[in-house]
Each structure stands twice: as structure tokens, then as C-alpha cells.
Image (cartoon, rainbow, N blue to C red; front, side, top):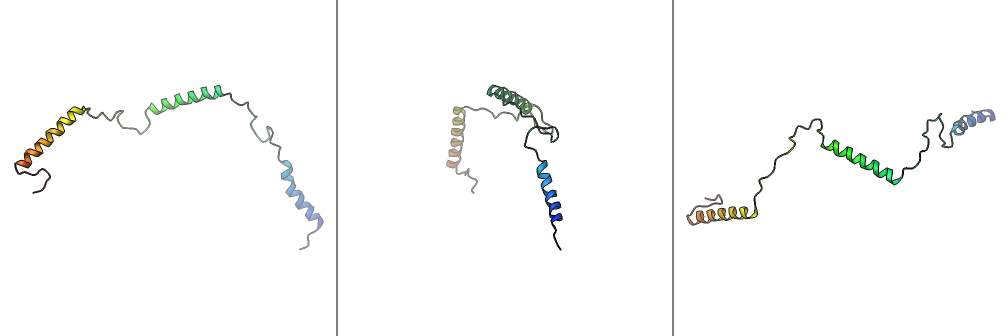
Length: 109
């Protein structure tokens, strides 16, 4: 196959045409690029962030689809430290009395 100068010119033109059609990155309607916008000030960013946080909190508190759990799972019974200590002393006394009577409380026979 013999490559001629004319065929080389055709191939070169086909390759270079798309490269020449590319733009320099400016905003133009043909390529639908967005027009550069001004940078937001820190106060604007802070107010937008606060608004997003409030929306997020409201969404988190709202009922979610498929969430059929009750709103509260209840509360554990609150017992004071002295009540827990008294209950433990009562259990120890019962175990001591059973051991003295010859009964085992550990499940052994």
C-alpha cells in the first residue's frame, strides 16, 4: 500500500479539525458552560449552612416512610444506688441462709 502526500494531508486535516474546534474555556452558549459567579462571602456561607442544618434537623425529626417503630422505646426503671445496695444485701442474705440450711443456690445438687 502506497501512502501518498494527498492522503497524508487528508488524514492530518481530519485529526487537527476537532482540536481546532475546542474553546479556551470561556462561557459561551454553544457549549453551554456556566457563567462564572462571584465567590460567596463567609457570612453568606454561614447563613446558608445554618439554613441547611435547620432543614436537616426538621427532616430527621419527621416521620420517615417505613419507620413503624414507636416514637419512644420507653425508659428504664430508675433505681437509686441505695435501693440497688439494699436489694443486693437481701439476695446475699437469702443465699447465706440457703447455704446454711444445706441448700445450694448455684444450681448444683
